[in-house]
Image (cartoon, rainbow, N blue to C red; front, side, top):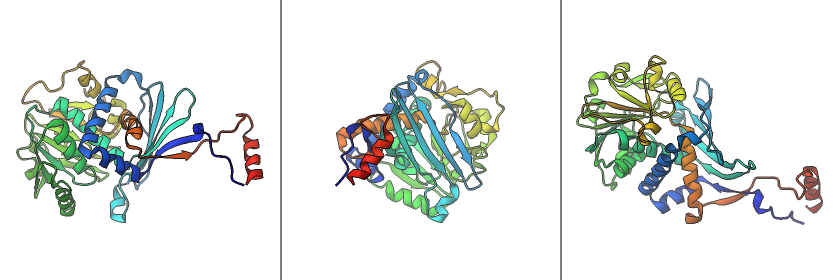
Length: 352
């Protein structure tokens, strides 16, 4: 005899990697990034509603494993994510992730989702939201230094949300650049493979840095950054890992997601604790000006924050009925009598 089917309350929608790819391809990568950007921007506009805490990190010599939690008072969300720079050489992804949404009123989860692909989408969307408010209005060319897993998502996001039409690529690994060139074929972008980071930056109004090495690195030197550029620094995301020369920071107006986290993990870990920065939500809400002159250097020192993952998960949950790309998992014990969990186990044995 089989056990009874679980009640609806015990079933949790689960978006697998396969179903996430179906969602992306059903909606379209560019449209999905733009729509996630809208959710992220909307949640930045209600910043005060969120619980905010730096991510909980467990560091090792190989990398880091992190939990990124937040809540808006009605829904709780978290992401589990790792960052292991040596993984690529061993045949593993540098970053993998999954996420959960749950009801605050009863603690029941309402979504379990892969977030390796979704993190790439939300990171690109967040970059584009920041650039929408900080980059030169006539920006058409972006340099992309670091052509790994994030590269194509970033390029598509900046085309869709910001309006660039040219991306200049450079990576220390020519095969990574060649991969990006292939993947961006037919994207509507002019894609230029460059022989050096200096060549990639030349003529660009936006510079995105996204490298994986876990070290203090100088991907951009001070003399590579001219007036009026917007820098989207997304590679630095843990203590001891940076991409920009300190002098660039001293010349820039710096915008961040959540200062207590960014001062630990971002480019500004190179600066004094009291160095002024502006929180991105303040610019989006109109409480603080972003770009104010043609010569201003704006720097988005992005390390990724839990509210952005919350926004992306919220978006995915809203697409389940639209796409049907999910399965239901029997994750929650749901006894007829909430006090009789043991009896539930015993009766299941009797009916098996």
